[in-house]
Image (cartoon, rainbow, N blue to C red; front, side):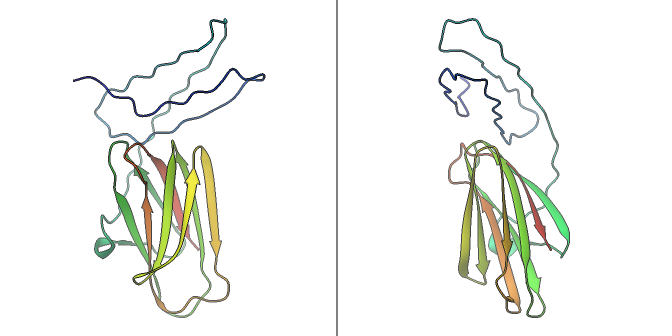
Length: 167
């Protein structure tokens, strides 16, 4: 079986050095190859750094199986390359209150966070490439209810990791 490319990035010959990181979420137990090339025939140098981080995650595969996030808890998760899926979480408000939710992600393409109040979608945010973050602070107080958070990618080529925190 021939290996397929996860994705590629063409960076034209820049006038100044570029420090550019690409992140992939990949399952363990497989071999991955990295190809580095230059479209120009000029002599040049590069630095390649590969880091492997294990992220243990517990998420729901559907809204009905959403994992509850307790207040002041940090959740870490991954989106694997080659798999189109969503991770579901829920927060329960037992009384009317202000909500602060932070989301940080590193991805090779796009990662999205959708927020639902019951079955009604409240908001969707998209983080694109490299390190990105989003902080939601409620305007006023949200009503007592169960709110669902869906972290997902649009394509099978998108992957990476994320951190969610509810304060």
